[in-house]
Amino acid sequence: MRQELIKSRPIPLILMFLVGLGYLLAAPATSGIGIAFDITATVAVFVAFLFLFVPVQIDKGAPLWLQNLSALALLVLATAAFFRWADGDWGRLGYLFFNVEVMSRPGAMARMLSGLWIAVQVFLFSLVLSTLLGMFMAVVRSIVNDALLNFFIDAYVDVFRAVPPIVLLLVTYSALPYSGIVLSPFATGVVALTLIEGAYLTEVFRSGIEAIHRNQVLSARSIGLTAWQAMRLVVLPQSVRIVLPDYSNRLIGLMKRTAETSVIAIAEILKVAQDLQSQFVNATPLVVGALLYMVVLFPMTRFVSRLEKSRPRQ
Image (cartoon, rainbow, N blue to C red; front, top):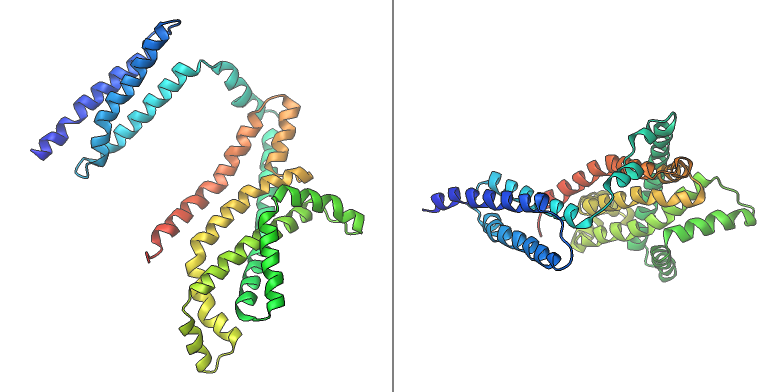
């Protein structure tokens, strides 16, 4: 009986989907009092479809293909409803944001790829330096018992986690030359992002270190290891595995944060896209810039998701 019930569900679900999609796409637009009927009919389409959709999704015995198709059908209905009610000028939208001819002009795509490479360089330099800074601060904070030193580490972490990155970038870029320190925009961006990300990573690594039971440290010290040796040989290898998913999430944020360096004239993706937008009076370069970020970030997000799923549950 249960199997028969499951096999019979696709038929009303498909029929409801076709009826609803047909109405959303084919029914003429209304005005005046007809709008009330149109709204009621649109709501009725979704209510009726959800009435069939929800049982399929919550039924563990339902075929996976049916669950996937019903989810896709709901997305299609939502898209059709959006296009019906948005009443947008889609031709103009395509010209301004998805204009292939703009990006096919000589040098446009080459400049975008050059901006991507600069963004990756800023990310890699900041990644290495902030990781070393964060781990150093976390280790010192855990080993040293000097109250004054720990106070300064805590102050660094609190201050640089509270300062907006754009503010730090602008202040650093504008103020350092007046003090006689002249850095290139690239170096300024790396320094600012390193200081900010290092503060976050200090807390990430510290949480991993504190997750290791103190008895392990005491055992290591009892066999003659120094505090640093116990940290290096016993604590850090275990804590790094613990914080790896959180650390990876910070890396994704750091890569996205490279876009903020455009405010100090670093020719990364966003800066190049803005320049091309002004040159061509078209926003397509901004869309291409977002897609280039996705090309880099999507594999990273999938990797982090796998790490989080593989981490043992407490």
